[in-house]
Image (cartoon, rainbow, N blue to C red; front, side):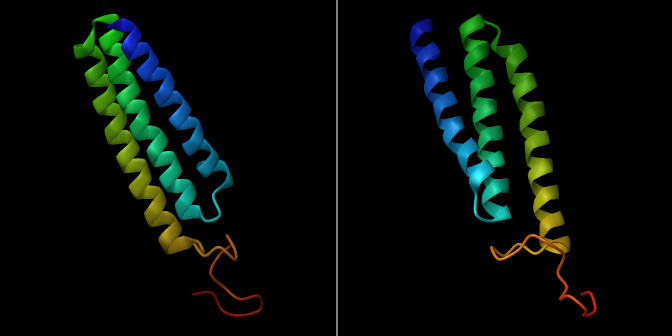
Length: 104
């Protein structure tokens, strides 16, 4: 049974690499934020799998819950920041103002 969880963890890590590609290469900032959120979510599941392998699920569940809450808060904060302060269109990542014009 431990081999099953080990292979499940390896497959999950490979899926995290695909999400890492979206986080690094993503064409928009929203793609990057969502890629980082997917990595965080898969990390929570990976922590539970590691706890199952070591036979200490109760300890790893606490760590996974704390990490999930932190991941959620950071995703919401980054989304709100880039929605209000940055241009989230694909054409640019700068502030929302025209050169020479007033700022919004």
